[in-house]
Structure formats: structure tokens, C-alpha cells
Image 1 (cartoon, rainbow, N blue to C red):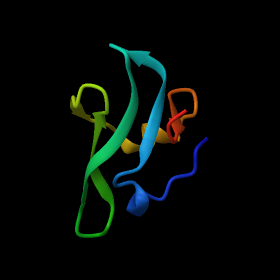
Image 2: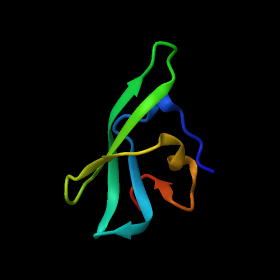
Image 3: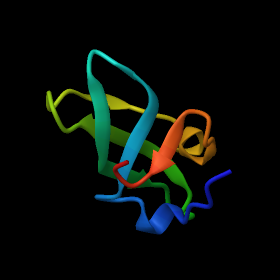
Length: 71
């Protein structure tokens, strides 16, 4: 499991273990926290196509899906 501090996710870089549509490298572009400081929204963007989509940030902890940094 990747260890992640939600406060440091913005602009972090990720590599998809199983890329689709040749989209392998991603950047976290948007975060939203609630009043209690809990992360409630995360958006990730593919570097090659600039396509973005919401993602459950806890998925980034799974090293079978995501690797930290660009590999």
C-alpha cells in the first residue's frame, strides 16, 4: 500500500499500472475538503490527453492500480 497524506496530494504524479487509451501518467489537479478537513473530492488528469475524471483518492493507496511518481 502507498502511504498518502491527503493534504499533499495536489499536483502529485501517478502512474497507472494497467494503462488504458495509452494514458499512463496522471496528475492530481483538484481537491476539495469538507469543514472538518476530510477529503471529499479528488480529480486526476491524464498528461497525454488532458482528460480528467473524478477518482476515489483511497484508490491511489493500492499499488496494484497506481504507482507514485512517473515510472
